Image 1 (cartoon, helix red, strand yellow):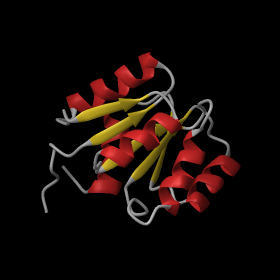
Image 2 (cartoon, rainbow, N blue to C red):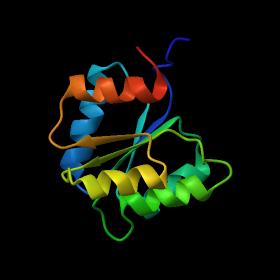
Image 3 (cartoon, helix red, strand yellow):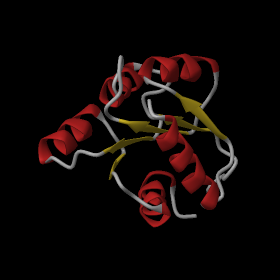
Image 4 (spheres, one colour):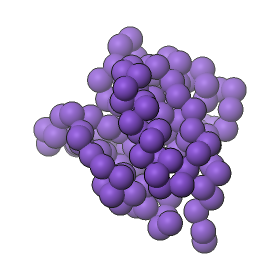
Length: 128
């Protein structure tokens, strides 16, 4: 089945520059229907008012982190199966294990490029 490049994607990061970088990489890969949230609380608000096919979220944010956002998304009956990719500067094994236990679909360590993003997206939404 072909990947719908018009699907709604939510990029969550407390740094505007990082949101712009992720949006730009997604655009390079052909995805243009991208919304942004500035933290986990903002993301939950957006998720409650719009259907998203994928969330790409930074881990380290205040006041609600990406891992906290992931846990809340997984507890929601409506959104529990939503593809979720965590992005972080941390490559510690215990963080990866924690993310997997929380139900993350993929994990990207910064810095990354379009090729890495495409590989991770392909494992979550299918080849494109």
